[in-house]
Each structure stands twice: as C-alpha cells, then as structure tokens.
Image (tube, rainbow, N blue to C red; front, side, top):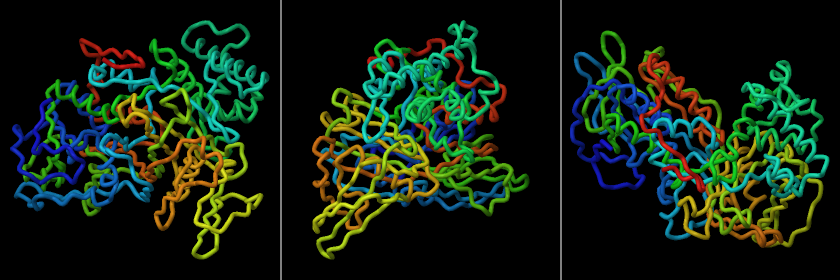
Length: 594
C-alpha cells in the first residue's frame, strides 16, 4: 500500500507531532480525512474512477470510529481528550487564502468501566462500532466481491440467532428446519410461523418474476404501505410470533406497537429485510446462518477498501491530522487543507469524518455543512468466562422492546449504613424480598424493562474470529436511545439478564460478585465491562463533505446507501466501485474470504 508513515508505533495514542516528509504532489482531486468505512469506500470509489486521492488519518491505525483496536487502547480512545489534538502549526493566512482552525469534538460520553480485563489484555480486539454483522447476501458483501476487497478479509459465520423471551433464550425460527426443531413453540405457533414465511416467500417469488405458491400470491399494494405490525395483526399472529418477526428477522430497532411512533417499519420494508435474511441463509456452502463476522474485527473492512484504493493510486498518510481549512479570501470558497506537519495541500473536494468541527464563525454555510446529530446509541462491551450457548461460539441475541416478562430491579445494601437503595428503571415493583444487611448487589432477572422502547442487540464472539484468547468471549451490546442514562440502563439490564455480573454502576467502583443470584452459577461471568454512549450523526455534502458515524443498526445497509448517495453527488458521472477484472470470492467455512 502506498503509505507515508512517520512513526513505527501502532498504539492508539494521541496523534504524533513527529517529523513528516513532504507530500508530493501537493494537489489532489480529493482529500479524505479519516479511514472509517464511509471514508474508505469513498476513497476506493474515487480512485477507481480515476481521481487522484490523498487519504489521511490522525490515528496510527485504520478504521477511525469503525476500528478494531487492542483493549489497552480502548478506554483512551473513548476519552474526550483523545478527540482534540492541538494543531502543530498556527493557522497563519496568506495573501490569497485564510487558514481556519479545525477542532475535533468528542462523540463518546457516559463511559463506565467495571472489573479488570484478563492478561494479556492486548490479545483482545475491540470493535468501536459493535455489535455489527453482515448479511451473507447484503450490499456490503457484494461490494467486497465486486471491488476485489474480499481478497483482503476473511469471515466466519455466526452460529446462531437467539431471542430473549419470558426470561430465557430461544433459537430464532427463521427457516422451515428451524421451525420444526424449535421446542419453545406450540404446534399452533409453528403452523402460524410456517404459513407466514410461505406467504412472504410467495410474494418475493412473485416480485422477482417467479411463480408464487398456489393460494398465497402477492401481498397487496395497500398492505405493503401500512405499518408491518398492523399487517402481522391482520394475519392473526400472536405477540411472541410478531416479536420474533419484527425484531429478530425484520430487525426493527424501535417499538412497533406504538401507533404514533415515527419509527414504524412498513410492510414493504419488513418484507424486503425478510427477503434479505432468507436469501442470506445458505448462500455460502458451509455457513450455518444468515450472518457473517470478519476475522480480527470490523476494522478489517475499511482497511480492505483502503488497499483497493491504494492499488488504484491513492496515497495514504497515517498520524496526520488536518488542522486547518484553506479558504479563498476573495471567493470565500474551499481550496485546501493545512496538515499537522505545516504543509498546505490543495484539492477540489474534501471529505472529513464527522468528529471534525467547523468553527461556527465561518460564514460559508452553503459549502461547509456540519453533520447533524440524530440521537445516541448506548453500547456495551464485556469479556465473559464462557459461552451463552454450550455448542455455539458466536451468537446474535435480540431483546425485543417490552419483553413479555414482569420486571427487573437492583437492590443495593450497604453494611455501613444498614440501608438499601432500589432502582426501578421505570418499573412497578410487584413484590419485595427481604435481604440480609450486608454489602451485596442482587438482581431479580425476571424480565427487562416493561417500558423498554428500543431493541437491544447482543453479539457474542470467541477466539475463532481472533478477537480474544481461547476460553474467553467478547460480547457487544447496543440500543438506540434519546436519553443516555436510560440507554445505559437498558444495556446494564441486558447484561444482568444474560450473565452473572459484578456490580455495574457502583459509585465506589466495587466489583462484588452477584453471589445471591442462584442462577449465576450456570450463567457466564462478566470479567470486565464497559458501557458508553455514542452520538449519532448524519453526513453532509458540499466542497467539504462530512461522512456518517456508525449508526444504531446491526448491519451496514444504511451506511452504504448514504455513502453511495454522497459519492453520486460528488461525482455524478462515475460508477460507485465498478466490477474489477478479477472479482473476489467469499468462501466460508465458515465463510473465509480469499
């Protein structure tokens, strides 16, 4: 890969201010700052279209907010101080243009860590954007194949998809075989699920020009436009089956039972996702489900596209922040950037990752748009002692909104004061259990929040994807949220429902084990955890473009669509990542990509 590097260090530390050789040439069609997935896709597509590309990153690693980094660097990368490196040189102006200082704003907040990671801690790789998977048949896989990026990344299939219902984990009945094997569904529920899947498959076949099963036909255009949950009710499906379809197969992230919600999934959208899910099952010979996970973490994906861009002539410079924008004094237009080395680089187009902040005093609102915040996503990362499923090393778990259970609450009792504090998490306590007065933390994991409004997704990974040592497991959790505290509470509730935990959120940082929970003996134990909140932000277009941050979804569909849309605005006559002469090939098997 064509790359200028100023230091041999690969740790995730504050970007170095060491000596950098001058970049030659100093004029490019496109300058990209940040090597996250959207930026890497744009760089690869622009380079494939024949544009000259300079791709920079202030970090000593690829991936930006989509990176997979060693655990010792994880906490420092989340800290606000990491996001604001001081400029190497002053923003001195010239007679022809002004230099406007850039700053980086923190996008992570409410960071809360518990426990100590096992040693050696560097053997754990942490995804900043987890949990995240790829459908075997989705656009991300097609882009990897079409561009040849699949030569640079390998995959393993996710062993199982599970849904948390009535206080237990059940396999998602996502196929005829899975429905027949399911022991949690009644015969009536199996019949209802099978009939619905046949209806959707018949519609999909008809939509693609094939023949639908006799008597099923297409879903009407009227039904395609109504909320999906309303269509499921019309099929007389019970709450459990509706929840499985909505949140574990159609992948809805928000409560679909709220009529006034603006997050309702239409039947058309739901059917499209089910079609993607169904076509993903069995696409690769040895894959066991619908989802893939990249070996060594999701940071491998942007790096694979960076390699494609480098093959097409893009120049890469790590540990190089953009510290200033260069603005033409007469025309008030963007002309280039000033780097931390002090060198001025000129380009007709600039793409920056969304933590870059343009000073509000800059009057070029038409050209320099700031990314728009659209909410938050609460995330959690855990290291656990064993698997959630005995025979599965990687599993995807779904907690539907308003789980059909009763309540969950904590009782913390202090031996110093002889008092207790009960946290209800918006619930009504229906019973009270006497607890001995000593320093403990007890969890009654009867259910998650009765007022839970968003889906909680959990992804467990093992050493077979090279992100942790053998015998230990990495677990990621996420849920969209408007309120950071509530979002974190959802994540903690899911952790407590699945694992034997230490005290999360203790003001004194204690790590007392949950010894009073009898079920904890049979559940995996959390050895280390971190819960935090990430801002969500959409990108913007102009001579200076801002890309998008990792979103609240478990897959990359929205990120890829927004990136393709941005590219089409930048270069309307160019094809986005056209087919290479030697397309890649994704094997599996468990889906390794060669």
